[in-house]
Image (cartoon, rainbow, N blue to C red):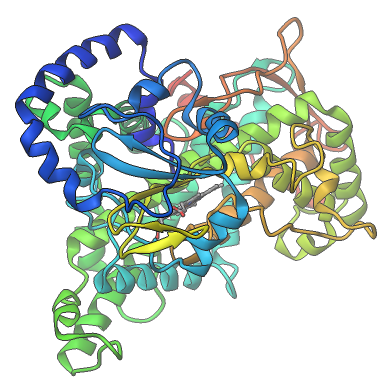
Amino acid sequence: MASGGPTMSVLSTCPTTLLLWVLAGVTACLLFKGVMRLTWGDSHPPSYPPLPCLPSLPLLGSLLSLTGDQPPHLRFTELGHRYGPLYALYLGPHYTVVVNAFSHAREVLLQRGKEFAGRPKMLTTELLTRGGKDIAFSDYSPLWKTHRRLVHNSFTLFGEGTTKLQSIVLEAVEALCCDLQASRGKAIDPEPPLMRAVTNVVCTLVFSSTYQPGDPELTSVMEYNDGIVQTIARGGLVDIFPWLRFLPNRTLTTLKECIAVRDQLLSKKLEEHKVSLIGGEPRDLLDALLQGQTRIKHNQGSGVRDQGLGAEQEEEEDGISDDHVLMTAAEAFGAGVETTSTTLLWVLAFLLHYPRVQERVQKELDEVVGCGRSPDVSDRPHLPYLDSVINEVMRIRPVSPVLIPHTALTHSSIGGHSICKGSRVLVNMWAIHHDPEHWDQPEDFRPERFLDDKGQRFTPSCFMPFGAGPRVCVGESLARLELFLFVSGLLQRFSFSPAPGVSLPDLEGRLGVVLQPLRYTLTVTPRPGWEGGEGGEGGGDGGEERGEGGRNWGE
Ligand code: HEM
C-alpha cells in the first residue's frame, strides 16, 4: 500500500510556495491562537520522560525543519542522527512521533500493535474512501476488524490452496512477455507495459475482466488510478490544514473528478455482479465480498456475533455496506497496482546495474525450471536466490518507506516514553532497512544477505517491507506471488540491458505516493530458446493477436 502520500508530500514543497504559506500561516495564527490552544490541549505530549522534539511554531508546527529537497524518509533518518532514533515533531498542529529504530518499530507494530493500530483522519483519504469505508485509511473499530477479516478471507479464497490466483497472474505474465517480445531489440520504457500487466491482474481478480491492450475500459482504469495516485501525492498541505479546502484547489478538484470516474465504473461492476451472483464458488473478489456481506448480515440477524464485543461496539457491527464493498474493490487498485509495479521497476533497474546478479538468477532458473515450461509457485522453494533478489530490492528501496501513518488509540509508550492517545506515529522503514546495526554495508545491493551459509533462505526480523502486526499489508501474499511469477517469468525468457547510449537508471528514486525510480529505458533481448517468442512447450501464446493498440497509455 502507498505511503509517501498525503502527509508526506508536503514536506518536499518548494521554498517560494512555502514562504507564501508561512505568511498566510502566521496571519492566520494570530486569529486562531485561542482555537489552537484548545486543539492542542488534548494530544499534547506528556512531560515525562520527554521525547526530543523538533522546534515548532504555532500552526506551522515543525514544517520549517522539514523543508528542502530531501524526501521525508531521508530527512527523518538524518534528523535521527541529531535527535536520536525516537523523536517527535509537529506536522502543523499534529504531534507526531518518528520511529527510526527496529526495536521501537517492533513495539509499535507488534508488541503494542493494537494500541497503535489507529489511522489519522485526513481530508484527501476521507474523500477517497467515502469517510473511511476502506481498510487502509479507516480507523480501528470492530467494524473495521470485521471488514478486514472479510477481505483477508476473500483473498485467501483465491490465493492459498487454490490455483486460481496463480492462473490469473500467469496469464498477465504471458501477455506482458508477448508485449516485450514485440519490442525486442528496441529501447523501451518498461513502466507502461508493467503497469498494464499488474492492472490487468487486479481487474481480473476484482471483477473478472481481462483486457487486451488499448481497451478503453482498461485505459480508463489506468488513467483514473494514475490521476488519484498523482493528486494524493500532491495533496499534503490540505491534509495538515483542512481549512485550505475553502481556497481554490486544483489538486482537490482533479482528485474528485478521478474518484467520480472510478466510482461510476466500479458501481457498474457491482450492480452487474449483484444481478448475476449465484451461490457456490465466487467468481472473483466482488462475488466473495458480496457473499461475505450477506453471511455477516445473516449472522447478525440470527444473533451470532463476535464474542466479547460491548453494546457500543455491537452497534458498530451494523454491517458491511455496499460502500464498504465498493471501497474495498477501489483499494485493491489503489493499494495493489502502484506498489507492485513499482517494485518490479526497481527489480529491473537494479538488474541493469548488476548484470552478474541477473545472470545468476537466470542460471538458477535454467537449472530448476529449464525452458520447457513456465515457472510456477511450486518452483519457489527451489529458487532461493531469485527470492533473495526480490527481498534485497524491497529492503534497499521499500516502496512505502514510512508505511501509512499510525495513531495511538490509547495512552501508551515507546522505548519507555509515554505516548498520548491520538499521537501520530510514523515508522521510518527506510531507516530500519538501512540501519548499520542490523545490516552489513546497508547501502550495498547484496542479495546474499537473505541467504544463509547453506544458500537457503534467511529473513532477518528487521525486514518489514509490508509492515507487521494488526495493520500489516492485506495484499502481502498476493504481492509476493505476483513478484515471484513476474520476475521468474521475465528472466526465464529475456535478458535486460541498458539501452545503448543511455545512462543507467537513477537509483535514488523519487517519493510520490510510493518511492519510485525515475523513468528509464532498457533493451529487451530474448534468451536462447525464446527468440521466436516460444520456448519449448511452455512458450508464448500468440502475442501478435494482442497488437500494439495499448501502447499509447503513458508513453
Ligand atoms: C509490493 C507490493 C506491496 C507492498 C510493498 C505493500 C506494502 C504495504 C505497507 C507497507 C502497508 C502499510 C502497513 C502499515 O501501515 O503498517 C500496506 C498496507 C496495505 N496494503 Fe499493501 N503492499 C503491497 C501490495 C498490496 C496489494 C497487492 C494489496 C491488495 C490488492 C495491498 C493492500 C493493502 C491494504 C488494504 C493495506 C492496509 C492494511 C491496513 O491498514 O490494515 N497491498 N501495504
